[in-house]
Image (cartoon, one colour):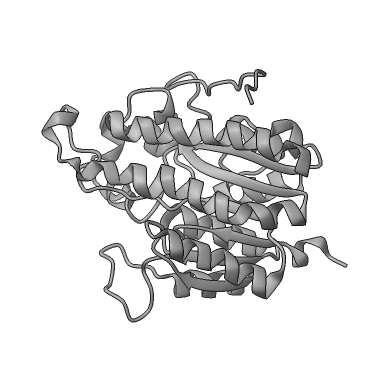
Length: 291
């Protein structure tokens, strides 16, 4: 029996962007993928487009089975119901991708944090906190399944200054969460890790690529080295298949470096480069555990 056809994944925040690309890549590998998010058919249209139903259809078209679940990840009860549904319908969970994140309008606005509204703290609620709640709700099923993988989509902003202290705290918290959850999961054959993405070519970032002077500005190097959401998903799928995944558990890893290691490139053959030397190196977990 083909193992990939048995695998079940949940990708949070998958209406568009990184989550959508990850879900489609997992579907292309034959997985059943539950895609969650607030944007849904019949709801208020998001300025960037995209719905969980559209992503689920794309997952199925790619070769998997896409299942759309409307879920506001700021609501703990909705998150709990999501994983209850997965348990009732599938009885297993092989991959949890914690990706749902609030993107406050002021996030990339220049200036010190005290000149921005407190709305920016939503990134700690839908991001850091919601990742914890999703992992908490999924953990019993992940443990029963065994051989499972929990990943957090994160950023170099966990170490370098990027978009201010709220963003940095959120990403650093997610990285530490992966380290500590790995300790609790270790005896249950469940790996947990945080993944640093490079600059990703999503619907939100697409206008930057279309600007006539895009390659003349200060971010030209990052644009030229951009990653696709699908590349991120293919790396996550490879991590789950990796027989040595438990050796990576508790680590903060860089998508571009993993892609190179696994021989995964973009559709045009391009190999994105790591930004380790330009931005920051990931933190290392401590071997000390105080219980």
